[in-house]
Length: 203
Image (cartoon, rainbow, N blue to C red):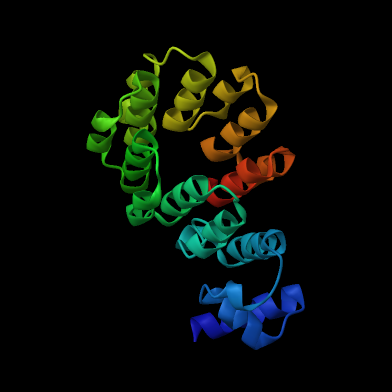
């Protein structure tokens, strides 16, 4: 009954058929055929209407994120994106580079033990940081490359101000998005693969 009332409110507010609004409330917006940007706007509107505190729309649905990964031309980057977006490390097994595969496993599962198999020290410390969340932040300080170090700080602390020190503009916008700034930053990325990865991974 409550969902039926919510569907009625959504339908009236957005000018949608009641059945369409009902499907959206059930988390099936992929059936509607809207562009992903419009879907996100509509879902955000619904969240505000019915009260985001209910938890129904606390994060973007995983299907909305992972669908963007399919537009990435590089197969390793595509599988990395799928793994992180879906939180499913099985996609990592198709990645050819061993270090990247282990970092993917760690980030997709949150299990930092995979980081210890990474040979490159900067990548290993970045993995320890980003896969560990706030508890892994100290590992970022051991990264020699300043851009990677600031990216790691931003991700682990969910503080996009660190991204502002990244020199490459595409990487800077990617950092802003995945550090919690929102998907809108992805649209300023020139490289199409990184832009789609950003759309897939940012929440």
